[in-house]
Length: 372
Image (cartoon, rainbow, N blue to C red):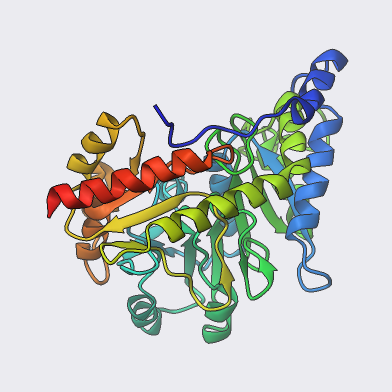
């Protein structure tokens, strides 16, 4: 079976994890946590425009929750979050945990699989930017042009779930670098991984508050807590794995870029479409998804499984989740439903071989012949 994903773990990038284990610093203190946070901060800081800090967390959902808490703490007027209607549910859930926000979903675009920008702008036209924030999610790594939205809507607060978008860019800036705050995930299927883990990226003057939230809300006096906080810390062993991954990031990205380009070359046929990028953006190359016009995902999954290929669907419309089913979506859910039915996420891991890509592409063509 060709898996949909597996991490790129070499002996060289795992040696840091062995060093962390040998040091006995295996919990939430140790040199690799600070080293990883420094590297992530460097990646997401933009000269004198945005000097961002990075704080590691135990997963991407925790990072999103810290974004929500930071927003509520610093911008109390904001009560409404505009959200996409077709993303992984964790991005949405994090803004519901504390019941501080009302959510307003917006329909997606059939070409980018992200926000339908016309529908988004319609909703923003009828919204107060002082009381409304926008959550941007870069589906499968296709980057939303955040700088353009910020120019078009001065004063709008944008948060980014950049869990799928790390190493993508908008207008030459790293995705996740120009918003109020952004979240990263280092789950096992992400471009770089710690097995689990995440990070929040935010402007440096928020570091103290975020550090407190992440670490049980402890005050300056040890064991005295003056804020409701969480144990959202990454371990030093996880950070050591992630440090090795960051050292290999250029090689990982080179391999994933070649995989995307190979798929596009071999599946340059009328029945297959790939995500279209917004102008002045660069895809992060996280996962390769295709839309097969007129297909049914359940049938496609069964066909690929019979050919020893693991695939995934595009995310379900959020009204499929019981706790979100009553949300009224601006623009409806018809495009999100179509993408969920017709899209197939293909194996996209860095060590995928040329002959495996050829086999997958041939199976796509066989499946299209079957359903025609």
